Image 1: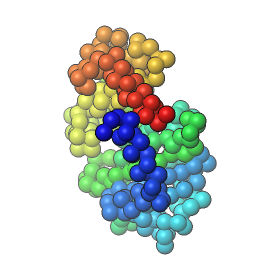
Image 2: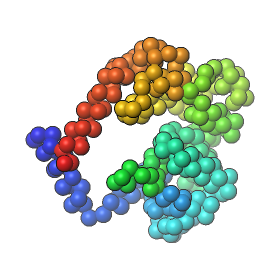
Image 3: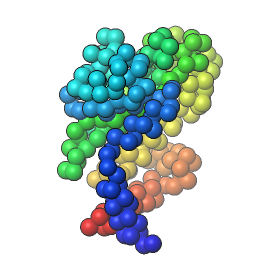
Length: 260
């Protein structure tokens, strides 16, 4: 099957599926995962049954048209809304953010949330999709609190600035060793590795745009210069930034050509 044939076959298959809402059922089988879709006004279009149970709803459809303020305690709703507004404003996904949540047993705790913008055919953002994974063990062990979550927020918001591990630990109210242990427990990465991974993830998203020069990507992701950025990027991905951009461009062009 040619590349064009593969894309045509895939499009025909997806068009044959009677309803896109079958995806909800996938998340219903994962009790530690919450899934939702919202529009630009923060109104729920869809939630998984797991989310409905935690919110005290009889059925997932009871959430349609409601906002986070209707379903969650005010502090949680305020945090979710701030995140959503940032995503709609910047168009950038939110990846592995620490958020307060409600567990299956009704107790409160922390989760890791990832939100992706949903776009229409013209590229405009019409909503977002969110997946959150419970962090039950770290929550009950006391590894996460508001100061620690604030520190992760700070990292994500200031990737273009120098981030010293001792300063981050102090912000979280921890020693450097304590901060590193908590990072490993939650993200399976040391504090330094987490910062590097997050910067490289951001760089990979920025490199998909041909009109952003690589030197600007390096600066935006907090690297001292383009050379340092290229070395670190290649160490993590196995490709130089230029090679990665070329590879992504070829894949996008191939898919676009197949659609035509």
